[in-house]
Structures are given as C-alpha cells and as structure tokens.
Image 1 (cartoon, chains in turn blue, orange):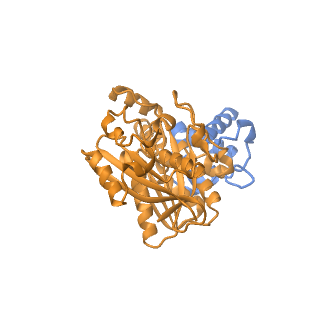
Image 2 (cartoon, rainbow over the protein chains, first blue to last red; image 1 turned 90 degrees about the vertical axis):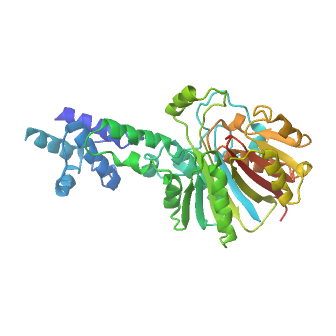
Length: 86
Length: 316
C-alpha cells in the first residue's frame, strides 16, 4: 500500500506538471482539490482519470466513485487496491 | 493612422523590458534558451504549470504590454503564429499513438493555434474579438492587417502580436529537408498595443501589405512607396530578415544603397513569425533615434511571399 502511495505521488506530480511540489510535500491525507491542499481543478480531475487508466488499467466510469476516490492519495490508493482486487 | 503605444518581446536577445535593446544585440550562433522573465510574476501558478514555452512567452509579453500601455483592456486581441503550439501538439500526437483508452486533456487543449490568443483573453478576462492568423512567414503581417482593420472600424486599442516555438523535432526535420545554410531555429514572442490616439512621440504604422507569388519584388516595393508619395531615398531605415547579398538580391539592394540597412534574423534566429521581432527592433531603433523618419520592413523570408510594413516616427 505504501509503495502504491509513493508511486501515486510521483505520478500526480509528473502528470499534472506540479513544478513546485515534491513527493515529500504531499501527505497521504492531503486533500487534492481543497484550496488548503493541492488546489487541483476540473482539468486535473480528468488528468487523474487518465492516470488511473494509463498506470493501473482502471476506468472510472461512475462520477460518484471519482468524487470519493480523488479526495487524497490515501483514498486513491484504497480505490486502486479495491479495483485491482476485483 | 495607428500608433504603437507599447511593445514587448521575449526572445533570445535581451529584448524584454529593455528600451534601446536593438543597440545591444549579438548574432546568435546557437539557439540556447530564450531570455525570459520570472513567469510567476505574470502568470498564476496553477495556469503556468499547464503552459508550454510558447504560451508562457506570449502571455508574459502580452501582460507586459498591457502594463506598459496602462490603458485598460484592449478592444481586441489578434495573434499571428506560423506553427502554433508545437510542443503541446507533439505531446498530443504522441499520446494518440502510444496510449490506448482516454487521452490526457491538457496537451489537446493547449495544442490548438488559437490557444495563445485564447489564454491571453482568459487571463485578462477580455471578452472582445479574439483571433489567430496562420499564414506561414506572413502570419504577423496578417495579424497586423486585421488589427488595423479593427481600428479603422472604430476600435481604439488592439493588442496584436506573434509567437512561434522551436522543438527538437523541428530541427530534425529541417536538417533532413533543408539544404541551405539558415540561421538557427529559435522561439520568440512579440506583442504590441496599437492605439488610434497619439499621446507622445511614438511610431506610427503607415501601411502593411502582403503579396503572394510575388515575382517582380522591386516593382512591388516601388509601387508600395509610390502609394505614399515616397521614393527609395525617403526610407531612412530598411529592415530585412537576411541581407540582400545573403538572399541573392544584390541588384534590389542597390536601390536602397543610401539607406541604413539592418537584418533581424541573425539576432532573432529563425521562426515563422520572426518579422514581429524585426518590427519591435525597428520601433526600438526609431524611438532611440528620432532622426529616423521612415522605416520599411521587407519580409521576404519565404520565396513565394512578400510582406511590407511602413513605419514613421511621429511627434504628439
């Protein structure tokens, strides 16, 4: 699980081109879309959907699922684990 | 008449916020990087991270022009670009070839030619006319013509500019396809605020014309000047992309024998809309030396087309 979280942080930084953010800056529970978190926006949400498909083969077809899954690295990792276990 | 209220260029020369930069130019032998400001001073971080080089250069230069002009929102934003957002286009096309399933949206959004003018208008929150002209080496001249038409129709302020960027693939293509020894391939963005009112000693645009398939270029230039009751000796400064000798136009160069002649491609490097840099260079030289009355910028970079811009130093 910890390895998935580390990979996710690297992939988020690279995919979203977060130039001033390092892996250490993202805590497992940092809110991705909150202004006091990473302050991501709707285009980033689309990039995260593509990221999940590209690296983990997971298609987010239900928008409600995405809302929960993209809260933080913690929730994304749990979502990946849940989907890959199915 | 239309006047240049402000000008800004981000290029491989120290042209950004440097009045008199034209006196401090060095010929480029290697492309290297453009001399850029700290983009974070001009573009919010969340937007900046999605922007490629051409967008960063263009938005920063456009915002600098707005600040210099200190005249509020332009009525219109008009941009010329020969090849558009190449970096993002390459990313998008690579994604389409290498990825299955969904494609990342950012590269697609940022890859269209009109992204430049669009991003400038979004950042300025400008709801006016917004247009991009793509006409190879005459893209800037077409944007300038459009801007002047808008001013003639009653608008007062128009932001006009041009930008292009080089990517490694472009160098590879040019190495394989072009045999002639050309200046290094580079990137650059130049923006200008055009105004219908003259407020101080400034440079006026007298005329802009484009010709395609031009064969007798000497006659076209002669007629262009004649339209404004001018002859060759009336031109104080002649700007061309390369020297007449380099272009095998020695005889044409002779008619301007008494005119101060400058080239701009040796300093800007080669990109389709480099005439916008030549335009800024000419304006800078005219502002630094008010004895220069008329300037003619001949853009004969492409063998099949000809762009002509006539400028004049004006007092308020």
